[in-house]
Length: 214
Image 1 (cartoon, helix red, strand yellow):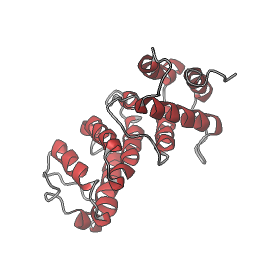
Image 2 (cartoon, rainbow, N blue to C red):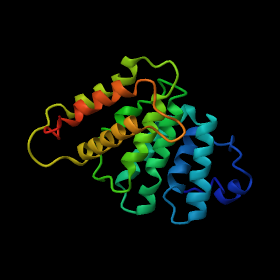
Image 3 (tube, rainbow, N blue to C red):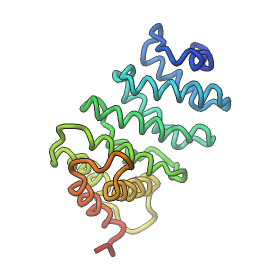
């Protein structure tokens, strides 16, 4: 599979018209290839900018889960340019998911165990920012705003002494960042409606590795 079906630089020059001739599932494959390209014209200015644009427009709602899975898989790739845009795409997917609730099992990706890549490029902060924006979605009850953390608690249940698995380290890093975002807020956006309740639940989970917390 190559990205030959899409001329990304030309697409960028034309302000990202959606390639309706391609099935959405095939477009996900094309994006996956282009987003790891060593050519910044293809990767940065083309594929990433196009993906962010189409996700915001809702053009890729039907394949949001596939986009998220594809991005999560790139966290473990060896080449740095492959990893760089993974959290950015995942953030865009999570943010869009707030407008189409139920379409994406987004919170499960935080605990995905099929990775050997440890966050080192502030991926946790980008994911936290996206999660806060999801929590800003209208109509969420307190139970709904905190309920997704049950998935995290279940994934962490049973952990004991010994080395921390990479996925667990990434999860705890994301929870730390999320707690900071929930207590400080996002500039010009403030706090989501149930920030205090979510932050309290996050702190409970953080006591698993940080048992000395008050």
